[in-house]
Length: 136
Image (cartoon, rainbow, N blue to C red):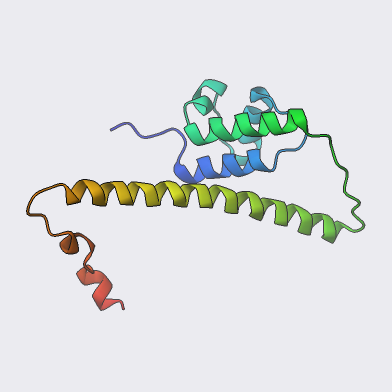
């Protein structure tokens, strides 16, 4: 099995980076920012192979084309930091919600497929593991 160049956690960080993106968005700019902020040396072609990154890139690009830049009045450095933190958390929540929905769909698909297997007890698939019983 080939180890992916970008881990799931790194992919999520790149998706969050895209969700928070301000200004002109290009693949070269994204590659440079990924290398600068995450220390990952990659290419546009590699980033395009990750569905989540590619989707977030296309959506953000479309959003930036139609959006006019809005300038927020920020009074203090602490307020600027708080706004950045809120934007980061909103972007992270959006990524996590999408990932959660995908995982729930996968679980439902697995249970439906398991249900089609004759003589398979679905309760055996979802019963608590011994390590879970010991730890509470």
